[in-house]
Length: 213
Image 1 (cartoon, rainbow, N blue to C red):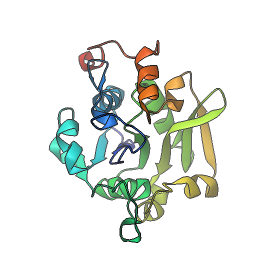
Image 2 (image 1 turned 135 degrees about the vertical axis):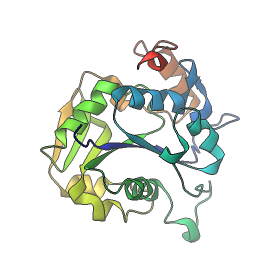
Image 3 (image 1 turned 90 degrees about the vertical axis):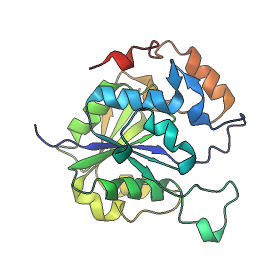
């Protein structure tokens, strides 16, 4: 089997806009949790994955993936300071890339996007065979995942802070992959977002993803 890109699921954010009593990624969704459903979508794509998370969410991640596929990073505090300015999405992406440094590419997927379909992940992965950067879009609007080929390893592995990989997407030719999947635009930041996602017709039926071999 040819080597395929690794999906890096980002699950280390503090989720400061979500005012619930527990982290947004632990909220119930489609018979699992928000993070668990996202991971099930990735598993159903048959692409390898690594979850970048914190010690607080480690057990939630390990409910769906093996321990060796969980990478721990320090938790970003709700109040930012110069001492932790290096933490954030960029730092998490770099940790995931370094953990799978021999991969032919990486797809970055936030853990709070449980409606992104397995076929979408495969389509973006396929685009990396011809482009250094590729991203899913729906209706002409850019979404996730965003994919990067192995030639960008050095730049990805040294990312820090909250900016993520936006500068790389702007710097290199980025190929849009138009998909019939509105989930690529639907993340979860607030309680209203959670209610909206739970009511979305495209929500995976309970148990369906777990039944995928």
